[in-house]
Image (cartoon, rainbow, N blue to C red; front, side, top):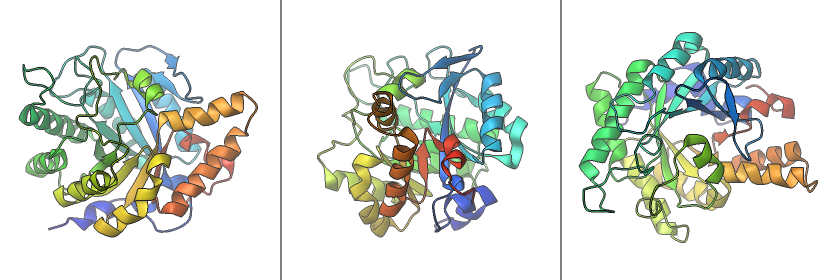
Length: 318
């Protein structure tokens, strides 16, 4: 049985998924918190975004909150590589203890920042063969730890078969039936992730991610991936990269009838900054245009590195 009430559980998620015009409440701000970091570090290409220590992250979220942002996508970057039961759970707890119900904290749920090899999965001893069972167990453990720490939602981004079902089962078993899953349901093996990988310390140590992410040429695979996540119990679906997946918004929505959004990924955002730096566009105007196009195409929410600029660009708060 589909648990529809997860998407009605609090005012923040109700505003995120309201079928209305573009507003700041429909924008999700990514934030990178680095374990043990003191201060902040620039992220090449992502103007207005930094890798943050926990104290700086709390200050930044406070500023964003004052600018109308309510939804955050947290990327926990551990100090040391290694699969542990609760990577980043302490960061989640600090943020939620500080802000409580004032924000809705989504936590990206993946292994890439913590695995020694930078991949989104674990492998058998045989090089290149994914250990599906171990991967699903680790992802489920991460999701449970984040929920126990106070996360308002989890967002699996690995594209491994069965991960939504495994996470849903673990959350339900552990008493977290009301924690929604925002699945990166159609995620391509894209060339537009470069700045993110620098921010999250997640570049693969060998090979690439084409074994589990979607080939950009394959429409049917892209559609089937989101349908799979919907069938496994995802509450929200997400396409990534946003602009190069825009043709898929409507057909996936029609096939699943589940709220769907887009991730305006680091390379897409950084390309606007580069154009502006060369005097070839107005950054704010171009950024706002992309948001309107995403919504016109059917996105109910947008993950964007510029969410904190929404009110300055004239977007209504709700």
